[in-house]
Length: 165
View 1 (tube, helix red, strand yellow):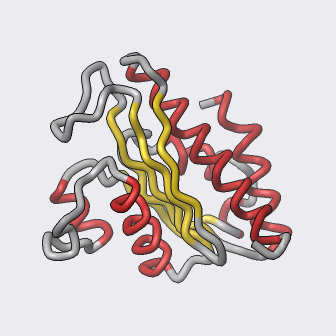
View 2 (view 1 turned 90 degrees about the vertical axis):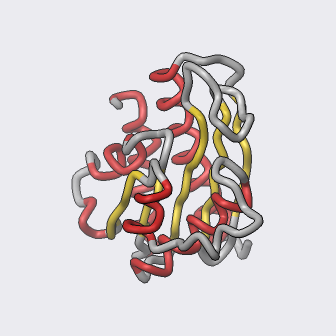
């Protein structure tokens, strides 16, 4: 997690300066995104909550996304990441929602995505959705890469919102 702290500090500074808040829903990053943001002193000024949404049951219990809302969607996709980021933002009344969903490895997921695949979405005054493919099955390295890309994407999106979108 140590390698994530410099990027988490950038996000924390942006959120504190703007007096904005964040809520997180992550899957294959396993809590690393939330842990990095919470490791920054003063996190209570911007961090409202987070969840590791790793299963269908967790999706329903932790963020309240129903099977009906999932109709036509699949996990580990950009549309699902966007729904998850918007939902976690709304449920926490946060300025920003960040979601990550993918396949850390060592093998792919049941949806046909290879190990090293993740989708990241930021919902807020502006939105970003993207897919990252690391190209390898090293589970721990992928988890770190997913968390780093999520933090970088969050910082870039917040900065873009500050420039008028």
